Length: 503
Image (cartoon, rainbow, N blue to C red; front, top):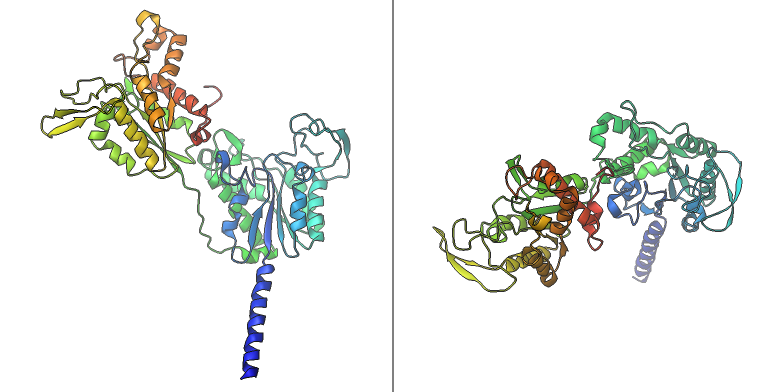
């Protein structure tokens, strides 16, 4: 019995030791590179993603770990001179892997007072001594190939397994083709990999070919941002990661053993932006009555955000709620979403007469019971009360409310655009002050633009009446909304806005 007990104790000790050893020997895949490998914190900062953020989804992470140490803005030189490579090198264990991709920033100036990150072109041993204008230090600058070789040889010396990548292509096109970098950084990366006997993946050619198969129109705004030809969207980063996995499977590198056959890829959830309001916001189906919400999505990064214009013509803060239009939006709200809300144009109507859309003036809690034609009695509240309800219920859903004052009418008393600063503009701001969210004074911003343009030019925006705008007027108002949000530093929504330089 004692022998059996001793055997069980010994067996258990061996079993636990084996498990601990297996856990300790689990290799780590380290990623080093620039913002096309990891941008910011690696959580889609500013909508930018690197392939290192997704490579783990193509690997069996029950058997291998992934550590993405890439940093945006670095070159093969500055990744080392800033001390970013040393912690990776110190952490390397025998059997670990290092995925290496640099080049996008290596073509910059060798010495300046802004970045000083360039490297000498090629793979040679030539050097250039500088007094670094940025750091104030004396520095010997080497070639791109020299820096890549240094990372490779130092990793190998620790028993790690380097994999060198050609830099991903930019979203540049010439005659329907994406230029390759095989005569520059891609070619130099390949040369170093071959000379050092390590795996090389021509990520540049693989991804360029995949882009060409889809075509420029399908790639732009989907894999890359319309405003940025270098950094990928989440989908673009996933494509790059998938091609690295493909390259590993085609190689004799032992990392291929950890590549999943049928990976299940999870993309970050697109956030939602809901717009609520009246006909000055809505799509009304009439050329002379176009709301700014029709064109607002042109200023939104729709690779990361879906815009829903739920504004409805003829509605007030009261009727948008009474008719259940708000309930349709509220039920769809998720944490992290946004709601733009603009009411006021129809709130000044009669409270107790058809169309039953006027709200009580002010911010108070007073009410008025109104007998509607066929639907019984409605308890009507103040404009401020309705706006505060929208704000509170948006925040309760974990979304962010942004209240806009109503766009101005084409009315010019005393030569100036009329501004309802003592009524709906004031109350919209007070609703935010009391209930939360953000306030944007769209009325004032548009009025200033109108006055700068002049009364005659502005009249072209109002072909039918003094309230509703044409397509051009709606575009101007949408741009103004985007500009206001871009300046809203307290809200994440500004990171989803882009405005073309020529606008």
